[in-house]
Length: 154
Image 1 (cartoon, rainbow, N blue to C red):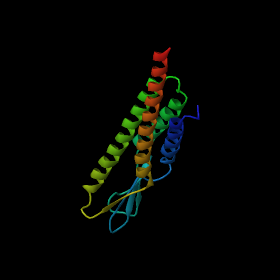
Image 2 (cartoon, helix red, strand yellow):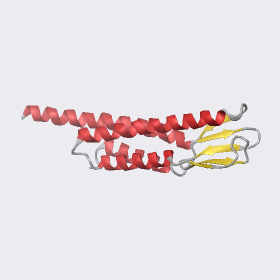
Image 3 (cartoon, helix red, strand yellow):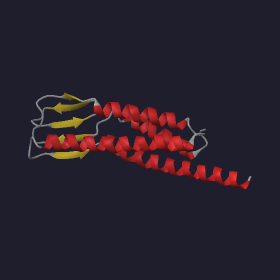
Image 4 (spheres, rainbow, N blue to C red):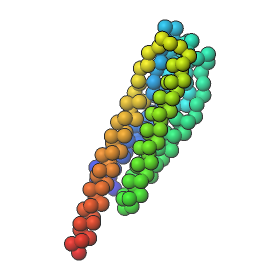
């Protein structure tokens, strides 16, 4: 039901979270090179922080699960409480992704004392999708209250 504004919020959230599969989350630079944390790998660009690129799957698989959940919740417009639960689980998984990024940053920071961390577009998109999910939950709750008030009138 696309005329509901929360469906639009969820659609934008799904598109942004899917786009994070293809863009970096963080860049950690030192004086020799840089390391980028992507959805499926920690890419080494001639840096002393890592010896070689490392393949990781946790962030990518979590992003795919979040995207599937959010897209499924768009079509659950008649089951509002289930829709809210799925969106909340997606928000928890997004916070988990941020925690995983913080963990990888901490692990990489123990290897070298002089480096700089630059958040990239992927981290920004995670934050934006959290706000969009929160707005969608507010809209779904308003719809639920409206339906309950109409049922009381009958």
